[in-house]
Amino acid sequence: MSGRDALTTWVLRFYVVLVFGFIFMPIVASVIFSFNSQRFPTVPLGSFTTEWYTAILNDPDIWEAARTSILVSLSTSVLATFIGFCTAYTDYRFKFRYKYGFLALALLPPTIPLIIMALAMLAWFAKIGISGQVWSIIAAHTVLTIPFAMAIIRLRLNEMDESLEAAAWNLGASEWRAVKEVIIPFAKPAIISSMCLTAAVSFDEFAVAWFVSGLNKTIPVVILEIVTGNIDPQVNAIGSFVFLVSMTLVVLAQILFMTKGKRRTVTP
Amino acid sequence: MTNSPASQPIVEFVDVVKRFGDFEAVKGIDLEIMPGEFIAIMGSSGCGKTTTLRMLAGLEAPTEGEIRLDGQVMNDVKPHDRDTPMVWQSLALFPFLNVRENVEFGLKMRGVGPDERKDRAMRWLERMEIEQFAERSVDQLSGGQRQRVALARALVTEPKVLLLDEPLSALDAHLVIRMQQVLTKLQRDLGITFVYVTHSQSEAFAMADRVVIMGDGKIAQVGKPRDIYRAPANRFVAEFVGRNNILTGTVTELAGSTVAIATPAGTFTVSAEGAALPAVGATASFVIAADLVHFSPDPMAEENSVECSLISEEFVGSVMTLFLESKDGTEFKVQTQERVLANIDLKATGRFHLGWSAASAHLLGE
Figure (cartoon, chains in turn green, yellow):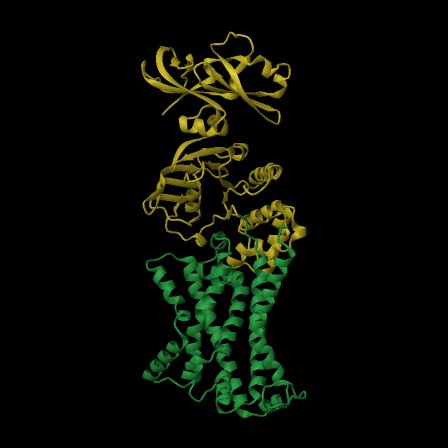
C-alpha cells in the first residue's frame, strides 16, 4: 500500500531477523551443545549424544531441585493469580481515596532491583525466623509475580462491557454471585494466562530463590552451583529443559490471551 | 388504557434528587407510573433520564426523596433484591454463555432448577421467534436477534416492570421500526409496565402511552404524545419536539380567549384556550406546529398570515419540510405532503404566503 521501496523492506526484515537472532542464538547454541559429545563448548562439534541428559536424569540432586521448582512455581502461580485477580478487580470496580497509592504499591515489586529485593527478603525472613524453607521461596516469588498477574487480568477486565456486572445484579445476582457468575468467567482466559506466566517467571527466577532457598534449591540455583564448580555440559541439558518448560507456559499464556481477546462482544 | 381509576401507581418518584459530588443530575422529580403503562422518558444526553432509570433499578441511590415500587419504598433495596429487569443500551449479554444460558440467568439466580429453567427460557425464545438459536453463542447473532435475546432474558422472570435504556439505539433504521412493533405488541400482550428511556422522539411518540420530557435534571412535561406535540407546556418542550414555529412578542390585546401578540414578523392572534391569560404588555411566546401552517403562492384569507421567501427544503419520505424567512428575518417551517407540492415549482415561485388559524397556535407557559 505505502510507497516504501523494496530496499527499505529488506533492510527492515534483515533487522528483525538480526534482533531475534541476537535474542535466541545463545539459547539455540545451548540446546545444540547439550547434544554435543565434547566436554567444552567449541566448534567443530563432536558427535551427537544424549549422555548429558542421561546424567541429569540419574542425578538425585537435580530431581530434588525439579520437584522443589515445580512445587514452588505451581503454588506461586495459584497464589499470585488469586491476589492479582483481587487487586485487579478492586482497581476495576471501586473508587476510593489514595487509590493511586494503592496501585503504586501493588505494582512496585518489578521496579526494585532483584538483588535488593532478594537481600531484603532474606533479611526479613531470617528476622521472623522462616528463611530457608520451601514456602519462603513461594512467598518471595508470589510477591514478585503479583504485578504480572494483576496487569494481565486488569487488561482483560478493561475489555468488559461495564454494564455486564450491573446486568447480573439486575437479574438477581448478589455482588459475590456476580463475581462468580460474570467476572470470573469473563476473566477466565486471562486468569489461566496469568497462571502460566507467573509459573514460568517463578520457574526461571534465580536471584531471590538463591538467597532465600537455603537447602531447598530450585533448578536455577542448582545450575549456578554446577557452573561455579566446573564446565559441565549438563548445564546445557538442564537449560534446554528449563527453556522448554518456560516457553511452553509463556506461549500458552499468549495464545489464550490473544484468541479470547478477539472474541469479545462489546457493542459500543 | 385498561386501568381502573382506583389502581395504585406501580412506580412513584417523590421529589427525587440525585447528586454526584457537586453535580446535580436529577433535580427533584415527581412522577407516577400506572400498572400496564408504556411510559417513555425522553431528553437529550445528560438530562438525567438514564440516572432516573438507574435509580429505579437500584444501580444508583437517590440523594433525596423517595422511590416507591408497588407501594414499597425502594431507596435502600439492593439491585438484586428488586424485580426491575433492564434491557441495556449495550444489551450486556454475557459473551461466555450461549443464548439459552443468557436467558436462564435470572432464573438461575433465583434458584430455579435446571429443567424448569430450560423450559421457561425456551418458551421465551419461542415467543421471541429465536428458539432455533438457543445453543448458539451470542456473538453469532445479528443485531435484531441479540435484541430479542436481551428482551427474553429480562422478561423470563415475568416482572411487573421492565426497564429499557435506549435499547434500539444500535440498530439500523428499518430494524428500529420492526423492533418498535415487537415491543408495542409485547407490552400490550403482557400488560406489564414498560419504562423506556430514549433520546429519540420518533421512538417515544410511536410507542409510549405517556411521554416524560426531561431537561436539565427536571421534568419539563408529562403527557400523551399528541398533547405534547400539539400543546407543549413551555418553550423548552416546544424546541425539543421541533418541527415547530416558535414566536415571541408583546401582548397587545385580549379578546375573549384570544390574545393578539405583536412579533417582529407581524401581529398574530393566538388562542389561549386552557392556558392562563397573559396581561396586556407582557411578553408571550406561542407555537404553531409546522404541519398546521398553510401556504400558497397567492395571498390567503386566514386569521393570521405572513409573506416569506423560501430558503431551503428538506425531503424525507413523503413529507416535505420548507424553511422560509419573513422580511424581518424570522424563520418559519412548514411541513406538508410531497404530493401537495407536486404542482408548484418551488424554485421559480420563491415567495409564499403562510397562513394559520388562531386555534392552531398554542400559547406557551414559561
